[in-house]
Structures are given as structure tokens and as C-alpha cells.
Length: 102
Length: 167
Image (tube, rainbow over all chains, first blue to last red; front, side):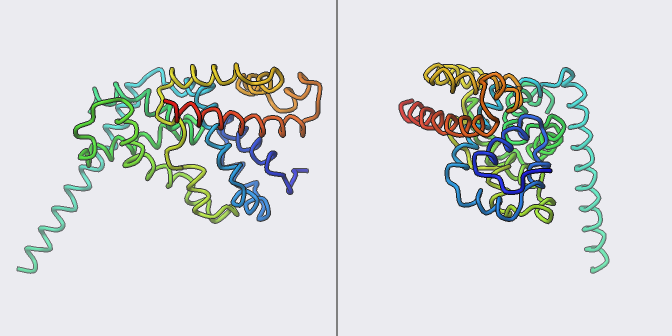
């Protein structure tokens, strides 16, 4: 049974674990109303999260480097092409409605 | 856009990983960040250092996208929208603009200044061990490990603050 009344040090440990394991949503969903309040009222928690993020980055940041950046670039290009298409379509619609008005 | 993406991908994705810790989400956010930059590159004119580039990209492009990642979860989490934002897309904090190499060096130096037990707990955590496994190694309870980690992290923060202020 999960602990639903975690102290602040347990909440930090669970946040750090979730960040390290890439499952932050699970941590966010696990919070009870009382725990969320405890987090909000603890300056120590917020200060500690800064260091946890830095440690996470130093320890595990390199694992995010995709071996094939080319594939990522093609996804970026596709996203840009889609946005530019939408922008053109909205300009066309705008000029059409403008012509109707005249 | 391709040369820019190639030269900045490593810096940006590592930075995003600090907040999300998940490769897939980092890539999804970064895709949108690059498209936003393409659409409105004005903030990136007259950038003359890597630190300035990262700061500008974080403040003007990444933070907005990071806020959106878990926005839908507001309904299922007791954390307020503001706390959620502070957790996932916080303001730039201590040593946040250090490069990966510098960060590793600084942390290594700070870990060296800790007591043996504190350093061991942090090193085991950074090696990917669970709190239970760390407790076994240190021959103590999981609760004691969590308390030790919490105190050590706060101690590290004070040390990092001093380092950043000196720097």
C-alpha cells in the first residue's frame, strides 16, 4: 500500500526518484491534498529541488543525446512545414473574407 | 535551421532533461521550441555566448513549452497550477547556466567536501541505485537514507550558492 502521508524528506526523495526515472507524472498523481500543501509550505523542498535537478542533469543528462540527430531534424522540419502551411492557409482565408466584404 | 539545430541540440536537450527527466518528452518539447524559434527568432539576435543563448532560449521559448507539458494534469493533481509550474518550469536557479562539463566539475568538487556517509549516499543515488539499495549499502533504514539525502541536498545547495556568489 503506498504511503499517503509522506514527510517532506520522503516527498523530495520520491520527486528525485521520479525525475531520475523519467516518470514525473506518476509522482504528481501520487500526491494527496495534504502532501501538496506540505510541499507548497516548505521552502526547503523548493531549494532542494534545484539541486536535485542539477544532480539529475550531471548524472543522467548525457543519456538524452539521440544518436541520430538527422531524424530529429526531419521532425523539426515537418513541424515547421506544417506551421507554415497553416499560416499560408489562414492568410488566404483572411484575404478571401476581406474580398467578400468589398 | 539545420546547422542551428545541429549545433545547439545537445545543449538544449540536456537542459530540458533537468526538468522532465524523460527523453521522449524532452524531444517533443524541443521540437516545438525549434519551431517557435523559426517562427519568431527576434530574441536570438545579438547573442554572443553559450550561456546567454541558453538563458534566452529558456526564458523566451522553453519555459512556455515546459508549462504546457503537464498542464492537463492540473485536474488530477492536488498541486496548484503555480506549484506545478515551479516544479516543471521554474525560474532559472543556482548554477543553471553552467555547461554540462562545468556542472559535473563543480558537483564533483562539492561532493568531495561532504562527510563520507553523505558523499556515499549521493554517489550511490547518482549511480542509479534505489533508496532501499542505498540503505542496504549504508546498513541503515530507507527512512534514514531519505532524511540523509534531504539534509545533504540542502547542504549542497548552500555550498553551490556560495560558489555561485563567489563566481
